[in-house]
Image 1 (cartoon, rainbow, N blue to C red):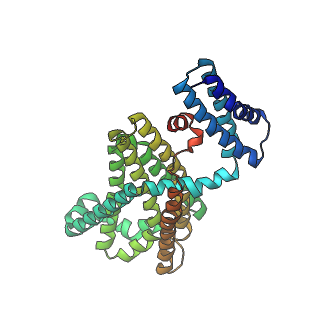
Image 2 (image 1 turned 90 degrees about the vertical axis):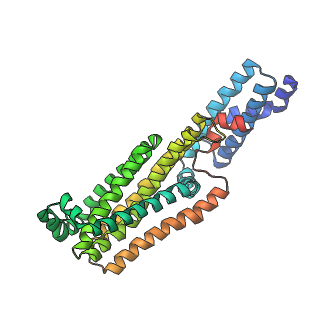
Image 3 (image 1 turned 90 degrees about the horizontal axis):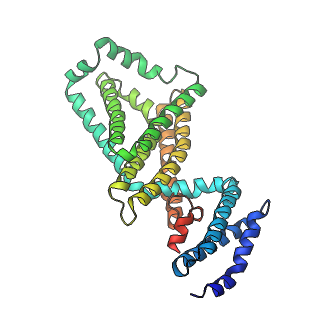
Length: 331
């Protein structure tokens, strides 16, 4: 390749990108132009590196791209457009792309919960080894129902939100190790199965399901999503596919970060339902109906909005325009 001719052919794009980088506040069209030029110059850098590696030119273009990337992040991520695109593109696309992981986690957890409850109901002696008669009486007749009305609704919503967000965060944070995620999920379903079987055996089954379902559908779904994403992070280094292990872990780690931020909002909704709807005086059918509606809205969000975003190319990862190395490699 004739390097001089190549420089002459693309000098205008480089100069224009440098002008935008050093300009103060960019308008909307200028921000779009900055991103387009960034992608073009990244391609130019890739060509120069592979065809005519000139150290000074490579250093100049690399520096220019680094400044442009910082400029793009500063002008776009902080904008309302970036905020909105997170909830209309990145988060739902991540949920859709990883759907089989968290749907599998959900199905497995529900199956284990059901099997444990049936087994516990068939073995009443196990209940006596877990709790004393006085503790069972306290749980069945007081503690379970009182739990939802002990604190002021606003304080309880905050407490529930923080607790569930912490559990979801642990599932994702420990995902790289695999086993801790399974342990956390098993603790959740075992606790649900034990309490459910005790309430069922002592004639309080309708009360149990009437208090659990309004908020528990969405809450447990969020935990299952976190568990599935954590397991996918573990699998990213076990079987990286066509990527290197480092690239695979980095990609799924960034996607896990996207899901973590999004689940904060999902769990906030379930926390509000648990604090204001679950203990309310509404009929059980109305309270459960609100929980089912919230769950259906979540699945609609994933399989309608998420599917559309995924088909537009969104994956839940950071936009490739902010990853210079990836853009240059793909070019």
